[in-house]
Amino acid sequence: MQILKANNIPATFFEVGRSIKADPQTTQYVAQNGFEIGNHSWDHSFKIPVMSNNKINQELVQTSNLIFQITGKMPTFFRPPHGLRSPQLISAAKKDHMKMINWSVDPQDYFTGNAKTITSRVVEDVKPGRIILLHDGLQDGSMASKLKDRQGTIAALPQIITQLKQKGYTFVSLETLMKNSD
Image 1 (cartoon, one colour):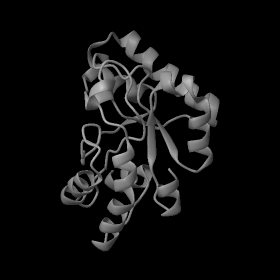
Image 2: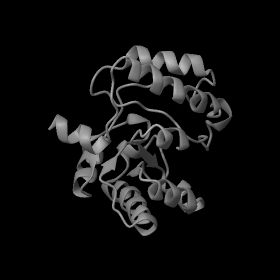
Image 3: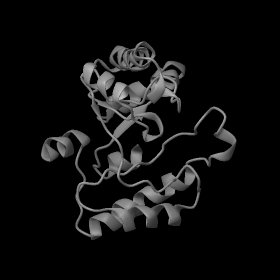
């Protein structure tokens, strides 16, 4: 977050409800530093697309309410766990006044700690209007032992910013990007 702020780069942090509950100070800190908080479900479950409508609604509303309680702002964006979608999940996000967002550039920083690899994957795949997915914390749950820490992502970020700026790219908020794509 400090790297983004130092470079005046807007970002949206999609946060998982149970992680917010465990560490509300981080969510508050992110919001106080001018970054948008998006809803990333309560449990980050692979099963969310096939959950009942009531369970999906509970996942989204519980997370959004907690974000509002901490930041004073309801999230306007929802990123489904693992990018998985279903008609009932799309409907639930709309019902809760959130636009569903996925990414278009995934350097798979969760599988590598190599900053050079992360940087090259982003820089090679970016085109105008693309949304870059990066991770800022460790995944918990059953996959945690297989996933890398985020030191590679942190080390890659300044290089990504520098190289994309050198190529003439500018960075806009997700809100601005979505307004321009409508």
